Length: 134
Image 1: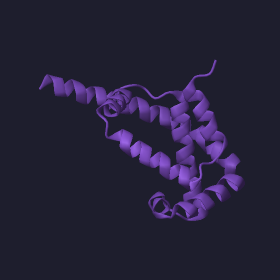
Image 2: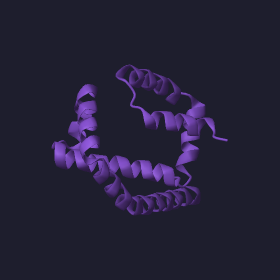
Image 3: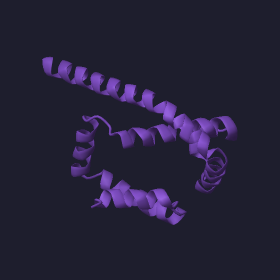
């Protein structure tokens, strides 16, 4: 049986969110991010190794940024400044034309993502050990 998280993940993956849905989700997350329970959950999650699904999602995002930079001519900072409609238009154009390339690059990025995650945890544990030693 699938969990609620898996079902919602599938829903978001299968269809793109409209601008109104994005705004509503952003407002909900902004409100949620202020709660102490959510902050504690985020802090606990940062202490754990990311799952392969999370790493794959990061790799896809990185690959998409690389494609946008190369073929659309926008740096990630420039792309972030664009209007949501412009982002959606570029996103649709890139995924339709370069979808296979994004998947291929993401597959190559997975090893780098794994190494970065292990390094991040190692540095976190070293910093935590130094903080307790003082």
